[in-house]
Length: 471
Ligand SMILES: Cc1ncc(COP(=O)(O)O)c(C=O)c1O
Image 1 (spheres, rainbow, N blue to C red):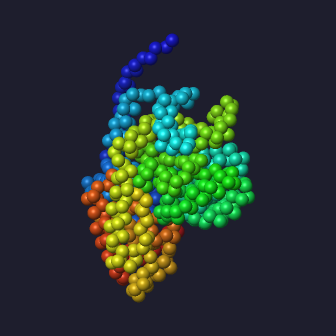
Image 2 (cartoon, protein in one colour):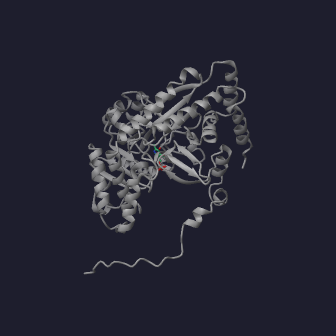
Image 3 (tube, helix red, strand yellow):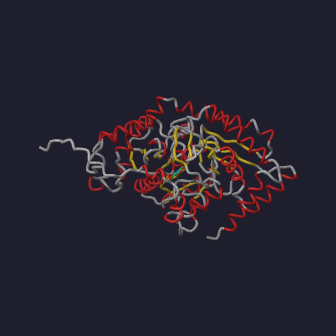
């Protein structure tokens, strides 16, 4: 029998990543020359072209040492803040241990432990499939649903976002993402948001494998009307269709519960999580599903690897997953999400009487959408309609650009053709940061309520940049 021997650490190779990090002069140029060139162009136009060199908790720092408040959280991968100490220690531990990772012909222990822990959190499911990204988990759910039901159609909601690989794109409810990528047989499978009779009309045909939905829709932060998802679940069961809750963004405590589905009292057949499952440090995703589905897919030994991927059984991701669940449970992350979200929501709502363009503020925990509405006063009405004639995507940029430029706060617009600014603050955001955000946001609102001038001048610049872009 071979004995395990301790290998000597290799002589230092002379490689260090530090010189790369210390000299970032070619950061944007490299992207222009060797990657998607549109990204640096867009960032420059918006003034988002910063040289970030460090991140910790709810903050980022640039090369000049300026601090930024990060209300984007890497699209929700950093629910617990950047470089959470428990994640960092776990990562270090794993690298020092040199765990026998990715043997492939193996049943890695940490994966099993994480699966068991996830089933404890989602007790109506029985088994877990691990993969690397949110979109990959969506692809998996689509395949699993087809295999289990032997049906082909997947119903999805208007404005749904489930990722951008081909299967995920086929259930994307935004034409802007689908256009240019060929024909989709799923064009007729889109259901208007919260429309239960439209859903039933399709389910009745008994050819629908699954209905996929986000319990809180990310594009616009739309919360379903109470009861819709429960009614949908009942109908899906009636017609033999599986339900798939895409909790890739709304899960892992972001909405103040482990899963946003818990607000709806539903028990989906498959639950998808990703993003903060690894604390943001390594890619990971999980499809948590009922046993019957696994039985259909992995029906006999020669179908053992019928669905799998090279990085799926990654111990490092599993270790980070176990650490994330520990942080979630031991550092009161659900309470924090509710507290941060409610503070921001109520403080922004309190500004409503003073600012006529401030509309509804929707929040479920730390998923927050601030909607703007058409003004009634003459001057502002002129600015609003002029800008919306130029482009239906511009208005929220007039808010996020000054938030960055004048206050160093990173936020995002919420989707195409929506007057919505979206906030995904880390669940660990402090009172001081919340107050700073709200006072900065109010200053931007003040500027937006003066037409002409203020942020409206920026509208002209952005519209010009968009129109002159023919490259
Ligand atoms: C709800 C939802 N589903 C799926 C995805 C796709 O995840 P990924 O970008 O990891 O492929 C995202 C990403 O933002 C998401 O928000």
